[in-house]
Length: 289
Image (cartoon, rainbow, N blue to C red; front, side, top):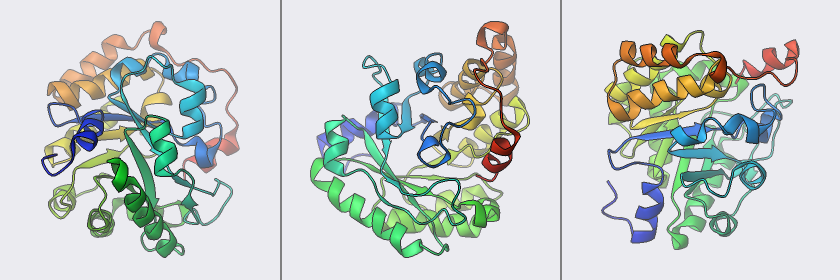
């Protein structure tokens, strides 16, 4: 997989994709446009029980500096595009917010750029990806292309033709890894994308079994792993579900085996603490993403 890369880039990629060819990335970058998202109001506290089970984190540069202990030895995939908020009707109006040079000073394993294919600002977001790839090249810094949809295109997250189009464009530009949604016919999306794919978790699912089934199905159909956020840290038992997901990604557990593991770990000790009451409007808006 990494034969054409120089040693530095291979080393950074190995912090994300493990020796078995699989990856468990924990996405906590939601705050760059969603603010203090439920379950991640205090990132340092939310992360504490999860870090031991994540291969890498996808996060903003500010949260890396304030909330991740220096002892963390996993990969760091830094959010490098942004410029909007959850208040925007069109989420595609983004620019580059982190240079490759800045990412290197933060010891990043990779940078992440969202592209909004088919949206109003499609061209700008594709140019963001092109710029990030060009700037990252001299440093041997991998780039993760994220096939975003935003609230005005949410239905596209289930469309295999749209996802294949978006993933292929990201790969054609030179993205080293692509993050996209799982869909029916996902094996076709993988076959048409000549770089590794990780799946997004998306909005919170209604059961642990649904989360585990999606992970299992995606891996069976060619994904190398997951980049999951809310379905882990918004769960009632975050430390339990991340271990179930890890069992599927790295240990080859079946869905039933992973679910038994999660249920066995779902105790008061692993229950997520509610530090602040949830606002109903926050929950409604966040479900759009």
